[in-house]
Image (tube, rainbow over all chains, first blue to last red; front, side, top):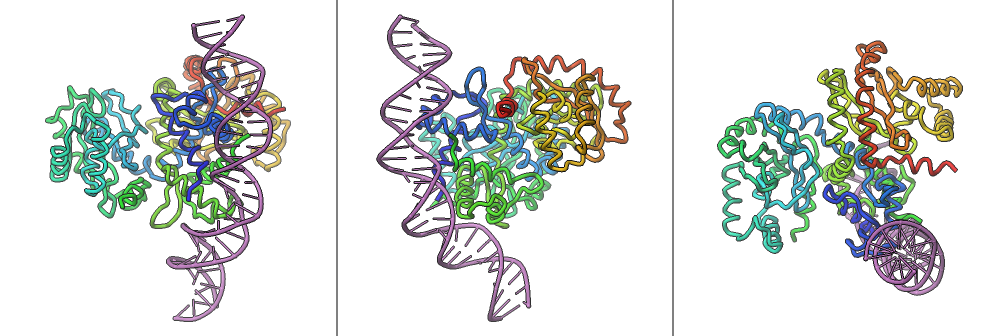
Length: 262
Length: 262
DNA sequence: GAATATTGGTTCTATTATCGAACCAAAAGG
DNA sequence: CCTTTTGGTTCGATAATAGAACCAATATTC
């Protein structure tokens, strides 16, 4: 049994996104269909602990710097800076493009780390962004390697949501099969309008998908032909990456996801 | 009135630090003097929402990647990547050393952003670390510009805690006065054994201290003489930095700190 | 390898903190 | 100037929480 009060409290944190980082008290209450009284008490609790701040001028609430502190604990735990980052940097230097590390989190993909190339196309702002697994090479490559049951559930959900990237199921499933055969995938203009990426999956010691590594660039330059040229580089490093995850426990919510199949 | 349940829940998050990122259920209960039953329920609640994970092999609990997502929302809100980062990078390039952005958070200092120099001395792992305001140039420069009442309270607390950096009060207060006069401060071997730093304070539009910007390097190379050479560079940029904070609301817990003077 | 201690996890009810309608004062908006 | 909306507060009925007592399973000890 989990705590209802804390669940409600945590649901408040989710309304704060890069697109909408500041919220009025009553806006949150409306969004979550909660009494503004309780939202107020929960916000004040978060404020006391530094998780949320109220802008004294606008009176709106925003996430606090406490998350910077905690996120660093997580990053150090994952040894991103020590282990994964150097590899991503190498890939970036050798390919001249940006490198993205994506992780499966519940039924979505999450950009956990981005190393930018010298060509400045701004990807870094995408760190922390999450999205459905049927959009973009980095996500599709993950979806393709999930168990059929999960894959089906996610795809069906996407169709229900009228996702334009997912009009009919059959061809999409064929793409999934194709990705598994090929071991990599290239897309252009899916996640970001003007960006393209080539992605390979990352596995844990038990050969379950954990995430993906992508090389990404602007669509006009990073064509499929260009992308295929970076494949050897990616393949050179993919063993090293898998090797890291054989030593480091990575807390993706994949286990939880799978548990909920039933 | 704040929520007791949520307060307890949030206090759990604080036990997870880079030094001790994995905890057993009963360890947390003992540490916080709580019933292990409730710790268990709260942990499971966090787990459901992705804030905490249980390592399936060790059965220990750890912080989840959700914090990476939320911390990015905060960083974007603070426009660290857009506004502050470029300036820090410039300072780093011009001085050849690492640059640290520190923020006051309650009664402590928090390293929010570190831009590393090409000379690889690893500072980046310090991001998110917090510590008392009487240790290190970056922190002392903040303390020196706080109102006397707050300054006194923090120093007294340090003496009570038998902080070795704070044996007697008078000379320390004289140092504070000196820092205010001089406008900058240099220390070696305080925060990190082999590191030295020179720091200048950062103010908000109302001229309250908000944090500091430091240039840091290894003690053997970054002597006081060397440090003073970078002062002109720091001063060149400090106006730009203050200017940023006149436009961007920065959610430091300074206001909360001051409120609690009474 | 039997005995003991400790682990994560669960159950159940008395107790207690939570919920939310009704209520402010103050600020926007018209 | 009136209306609406804002953040914030009060308080009693009620629903969620707390924690002692309880597992089964894994470590630890001897």
